[in-house]
Image (cartoon, rainbow, N blue to C red; front, side, top):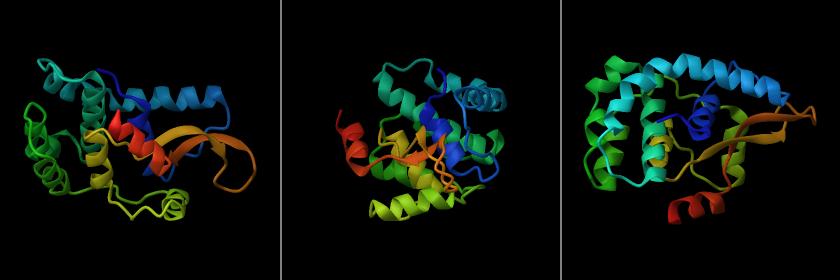
Length: 174
């Protein structure tokens, strides 16, 4: 499996250092550098998805969510957590949520402009693990898209954005 833009969106949502890409080429370069950084995690987590006969869209969301956790806390802590064991099972949403929320977050500081967007959409403030849990069950919170520069320069940049609640609902019901 390969990571999707959902994973990149979560990681960038908590990355306070990387500026939004101003051009398509810069976005591609940032994405490639991210893929290079996350490759060891992909290789470690891929075996969890080898023998399943799951829904491919759901499997992609699960893969992205687990990669996000592993990239945040490291592979040793990830494989010591209950998350690695839940992939091949059909645990209830409650058990899945408990597994995610029992894993501490290393980087839990969301970009301020995304917090403002969440407030605008009347979304409750969520932890990184809650956002990853929602992605795992097929309800992504963030996307990477072309949008106005959050710094207020009126330029168009490639940056993480909160998906409108209606789009989040549509993702859950497909």
